[in-house]
Image 1 (cartoon, rainbow, N blue to C red):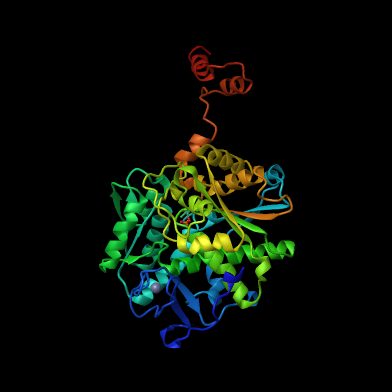
Image 2 (image 1 turned 30 degrees about the horizontal axis):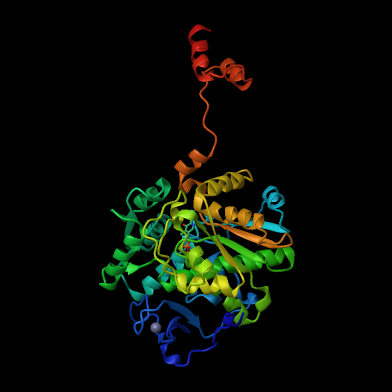
Length: 435
Ligand SMILES: *Cc1c(COP(=O)(O)O)cnc(C)c1O
Ligand SMILES: [Zn+2]
């Protein structure tokens, strides 16, 4: 795990603002973070990563939520709703079905707008304020737009969201709409939306808050910090593996960065870093393909489709950060079918936890890797569930039991429950007419 190390100070400290600078992961150039708006390396176009003069230890963290971890963030506080502090559920039924030592679900659907995107936005919008921008924008499969709309509203900033027409779950559009974003429905997929919004950002029309923005990932790092702390508190050790759904691979990159920084700070031994395991839908699996083929970057999939609309992405922008994360931690990536995703969504719901389809991909991936013998029965596993059930009510209704029609009398209901009629709806109504 040689690549887990981070340098502990910039070669040219003059680029640092707040003890922070932007490091190009391709050419190593350093850039000042808050002097002007910058998303990618000005020298080579590579992805940028936020670097710090100092990396924290666990005892540096205090308070609650995302800003508990300000010692690992570029600011002390930000526009907050507040976010983070999500539950690390025990799921005994699923745990024994899958047959691992420990299975926990980190339910990010419990954030204020119902997905982990809130963690990125509280930090991203704080940076937008520092830069003095007046319009925020993102492309989104739904949850990013819901989060940005809420945080933009809270900060009093204009918000623009670009969505693939007809491919965003109802709850997410409703959120963006009510929080007052301008919603532009693009006749194309998410990747096309992202191309356009990147152009707009490059032309200075808006501040980009997709996960290409390195500060988003700083906020999302706190998922990893909460997992490490909570699991250690309860079990006296760190989990062996974290399994997560992968779309743009921002979260995968963020978790890898979290682990590397805790290694750099000295509180996490390289051998204790959890294996990052990414799960994609079969219809949108360029990261899985890149892992299987040993590629450095992903091939862009032009046509993507899956019930898990939040990960319906063919060109994961954070692949150059996330692929090393999967490899260096000894993890893997796997693709699951839509029916495996829906089955997992039902199984999670059977534990009382409601998640949207993309979230269930993590558990579907765990089941598949267990069946293939790639995950040992002695492992402690944390699955990330990224978004709330209510985000996609149509998918939930389709996956769940159908409502049964009954007449409007106690007798009709009792007769129906006793199963005396197959055509209960009709007979219930007849019963009412003649009873
Ligand atoms: C954004 C999102 C993902 C994908 O996360 P990436 O960081 O883009 O890989 C997965 N699930 C849900 C519910 C999301 O909103
Ligand atoms: Zn560069």
